Image 1: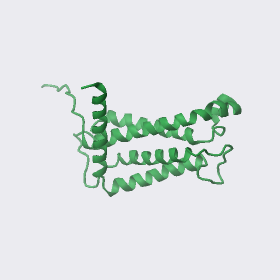
Image 2 (image 1 turned 45 degrees about the vertical axis):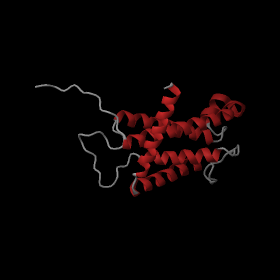
Image 3 (image 1 turned 90 degrees about the vertical axis):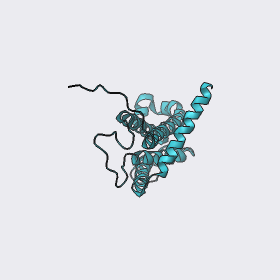
Image 4 (image 1 turned 120 degrees about the horizontal axis):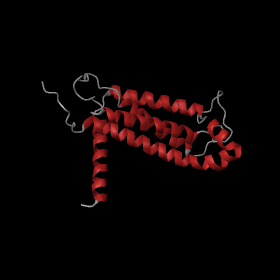
Length: 187
């Protein structure tokens, strides 16, 4: 079997496990996902003026791809946040691995990916000359010349990182990794 076939099979298995995990979600996770996605979407949308408001201004109008990148990233962030919520009636066992992932290292990795995706999405959909970091580093013209063309790449990267984090968390809800052997102290 070729490497490409093995890789494709692993990706199909990951997607299958993620879908299976979503099917087991109860109202608690669904509501958490909806509230979290709405909250993330509102914060990013207001701050980047994708949602017009009197508090913030935007010198460069949004481009059409800003809206889908913002919405999809917000939805994925909501799903990712909801993966940290335990279903009603299932208390985590103090001696067993955490319910949602089965692996605390995976928790940190997916949390970092999700956080990085959120920051990248923020920079991706924001006004290129309203970004103080880009403005200080590149100046007004540099922000338009160098940073603005880079924003679609940031958006794609944010979407990929968000999707990976969600897949890892969901997959871990239904298929825990095999525990590694630990040294057991003998008495």
